[in-house]
Image (tube, rainbow, N blue to C red):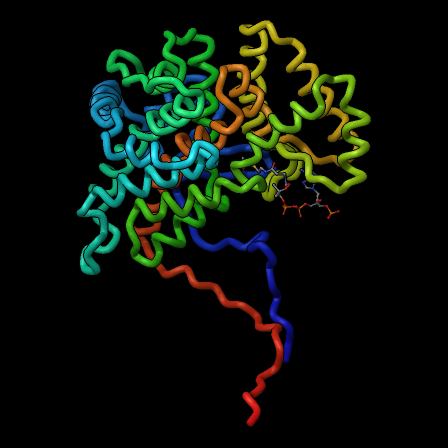
Length: 377
Ligand code: ACO
């Protein structure tokens, strides 16, 4: 029998088409619905990019106003969600909180695919559910960080846009426009990235005609791992370990001798640099200047140049976003939940796309266990 051509980790396998985003490692570019992500980050509020991912076009002024009104309407958490979050041990990872809260919101939506006949829901229903999750996630993330700090939750503010309101609910202070702009850029950069592990998870779940909430809950689980979204948190742990730029060389000598993965570097698709990094690094630089924290940029630059020189492996988006979120004041454990708040837009766009042209995702495996045998006696 001939050995099958196994693509471990599905590396290099094209499994379907998508019209949502295009990742091109040759030109180091990333397009959302045709627009370069750098242009979107420089010119658009995150709400407009969410609209673009879902509808295929940027909103005009009236569409954006209507979309923002709908987002504001769904910002506040219900008492049920707050109570459920409060039941989760404070020592649990906040990704568990986010996963549980989304699951509960789904369970409370009794029309969400409970019936076999109406399994995933219509595109319109799923769009409505997507906006609700998009609107609720900042409150879930902010609630979690404040809970761990022993602080009272802060209600959303109707006079603030998505990013400013997110920071308001987390810190209870009117955020500086420089900080809002850097945060808004990070949300846009994290929003979508084709068939990454968490998005693919969402598509697999959708392909069984399960509901949108189940797909998002599964995607959150996939994102939690340090090889994927968990890396932005892990970058800060590394920064904390290294301490300052002058320690980079001995730290890296030891880490590489121990064959450690250096978090925030490397990518399955990009091999000569992540298209999103220059934009996020520029946002980090504005924060370094705003908070007057030159030493953060020094450590960032020292580790990057030393690791690239030794291994030829480049930073991914998690490398600049980790220290950026730290400077803004987010706790390290909150970083991956921030990624969820952004990526829920891409996940749900893919859920709707998958459901619209569905085929059950069910690959094959090659059995290499013991040969057939029988119970004796
Ligand atoms: N540190 C050290 N070595 C690395 C790293 C790294 N960050 N990334 C890749 N390598 C090495 C591997 O050890 C391997 O070496 P070998 O051939 O000698 O065994 C080689 O480069 C190829 O690496 P793979 O892990 O096989 O490549 P793959 O495409 O499967 O991995 C991945 C991509 C998982 C992202 C990897 O680069 C990694 O683990 N990076 C660290 C985690 C991380 O930053 N994840 C974030 C991804 S981007 C995002 O979610 C926004």
